[in-house]
Image (cartoon, rainbow, N blue to C red; front, side):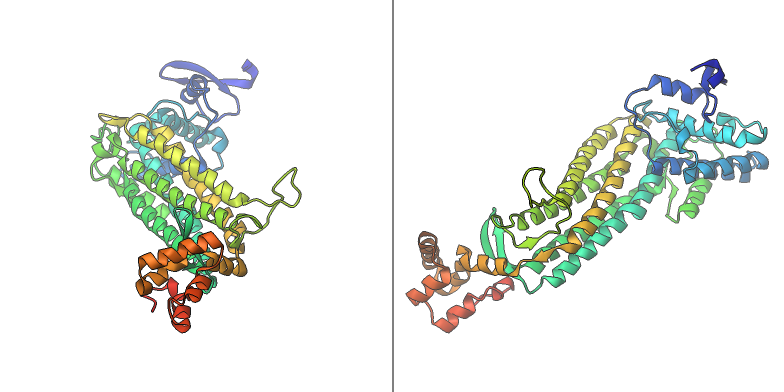
Length: 461
C-alpha cells in the first residue's frame, strides 16, 4: 500500500498502516497480514450478532454508570449499523485466525470505535467498545446468538414448508397403492401416501430436534470476561446484557448458569451440529427415495414423476435428471462433513477456553444457511410438483412375488413360498397361479389378494 492510500493506526504493539478508507484499526490490520489463509469471512448472521452484543454491552455499561451517555449512544448507533449489515465490508479477518476469535472481536471493536468517533469523539476500541468484555466471552456469545437466530428464522421455516408439502402429497397420494420395498427387493404393498407420510414425519421430527437443541444456545457466556470469573465486569453486567439481547431478538437468551462451562466447553454448539447432521441424514433418505421412485422414466421404477425443470444432458436429447434431489444430497454431504469439523473443534476446550471457535462458528452457520436454502429450493422446485404414476404402481403390484405374504396365514408359509417360486419361474402372477391351483375359493382369494387391504393392519381372510 502506498503512503497516500493509507493512514497510521496504533495499538499496544505500535504503528500499522491501514487503508485510508478502512474503518478497522491496527489490530485488525495485523490479523489481515497474519492470516491470508482461506478468504473465508464470518457470515452475516455472526456479524449481526456482534453488533447486537456491542449495542447491548454499551447500553448496560451506560445504565451501570460505567460509560458516559454520549459515548454509549455513539457506540450503540455504530453497533446498529454493524447489526444491519451496513459495515460488513469492513469485517476482513479470515476465519483461520486466533482460536479465541480475538482478531474478529477487535475488528468489531475498531470498526465501531472509528465509526462512532466520526464527529471527533474520543472512543477507544478496548476501553469503551470492549468495556466489561473479553473476546473469550464475546465470541461464544455471538456463536449462540447467531446460530439460534438462524435456526429460528431461516432453517425451521424452510423445513416447515417442506413438511407441509410432503404432508400434502401424503394426502393426495393416499389412494395410490404401490409395492413396498425392503433390501431394495419387492415387499408387501404400501400406499404412496403412507410412504410420503413417513417422509413428512421425518421432517417433523427433525424440526422438533432442532428446536430442542436450539434451547441449549440460550445461555450466553457474556460477563465471564477472560476466564469465566467476570473480572473487570460489573456483577450485574451479564444479566443485563442477556436481557437486552433477548428483548432485541425476541428469543429467551439468559446469562449462563456457569461461565466456566460456557467458555471452556462448546457442548451446546456440538449438540446443535449433531442435530443438523441428523436432519441431513433424514433429508438424504428422502431425496434418494424420490430419485429412485422417479427413476426411468421407461426403464426404472417410475412410480412417480419429478418436475422437469432443465435439460439433463449435453449429449442425450430429451434426458431430464433429478437435479433438485442431487443438489439437496450435496448439501447434506457438506453438513455431515461440517459436523465432523465442529466435533473435532469442540474437543479443543483447553482448561478455560476453547481455541477453535472461529471454524466452529463458520461451519455451523454455513450448514444452517445452505440447509435452509437447499430445502427451500427442493420444496419449491421438486416436491410440490411430484405426480403419481398410477398405472405403473398398479402394474408393479400384480407382478410382485411378495403378494404371497398375504396368503401365508390362510394356506401356510411353505405353500405360499411354493407359489412365489413358481411365479418367479414362469412369469405368471401370484394371483394367476393361486387361482389355477384353487388354493382358496375365488371370492376369498380376491379378498386376501386385494392390495389396498394389505396396506392396513390385520390378517386378510
